[in-house]
Image (cartoon, one colour):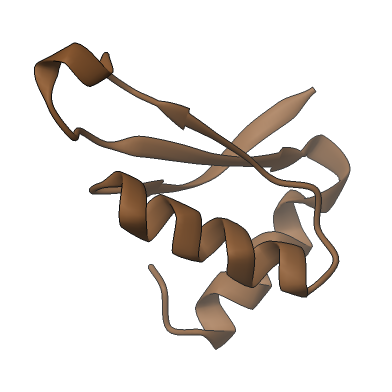
Length: 65
């Protein structure tokens, strides 16, 4: 099961967050909250259930809230 650890305001930031977390060894998915046909909207950053706490810690260390 995958859980949301952050919501990014656009695709570029979602990809940057994904790269940051992957660089720390996490499995990461990004999922758009609204369709691309409506423009660049928000994106969910997801990690496996078992990694939520640790991924949140990494985001805090990088001052991402």
